[in-house]
Image (cartoon, rainbow, N blue to C red; front, side, top):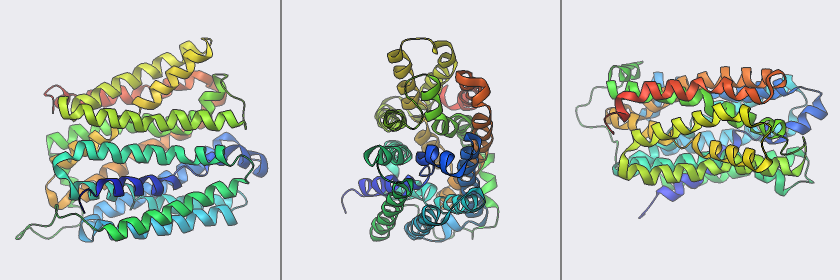
Length: 388
């Protein structure tokens, strides 16, 4: 196969459509189950918590590097599709919904970080640009349920979620057929993987700087994606439950894919660290400005949200590329999973606070996210100062 990257990134798009599938039905769930926006945050955090425990298990046990990444990806995408379909068909309230969304997150732990490892196993020499495409597809996968909801406006909410399950099944088949790349194979004489060895990755200065930048970025990213419909509503750009709300949410999240692709292209010229720092700085500016422009013309608020959507995720692939480069080959999968685990634990707090406080704070909720990119810039400083 000449270029496996398009196969991997398309499978990532389909597989990660499971992540926010419930959020696309938020208005319907609030009406039919009698729940609150904070409960939607709880459903999102159930996915995050499952993902955290799953990635932590992969990292600490070394499973992410003991078995072929393609097999883990395929199996987890298959199980995730089943759990997501069960949510659509069986859940009738928070008591049944939360465990099923947790199970989806647990399965996604074998999709996202293992997808990154697959990219590095095929094209390590251009990991930055290839991972930019991969995270671009993760971003589109996040936005996809909103797009499906818009296209099937008359469908019941369960149908939107079932489409995501079908796409995840297709992802599993694509990656199973592709297999692993020729790189990242264990070297002869490499000591056996020890339980918890991945923790030592943090003793490497470059890995530590990249990880700290990533942790700050994560405080902002998933909370922003979760709050996007609410930010559109408080901006006065759309009404709750309207088709325009789904359309705008899709556009604001999906434009992050374009931000990733532009960042990947720029990284070939200025390096991943400077691209990540620029994206962090721009998203911090958007966080700071959004509450101040709540009375501005609609087109100004929309442009700001689109810029925010483009920059909030553009740095993500470069943290993975820099961290993978800083690790020894035999622990790349475990190190990326461990970094993901901590980063997604951070997202749980910002998502829960953001969804709980949006009613009282209104547009000022953006300032809750602002510390993330600022801390990320400080953590990443040793790398972007040197232009890595």
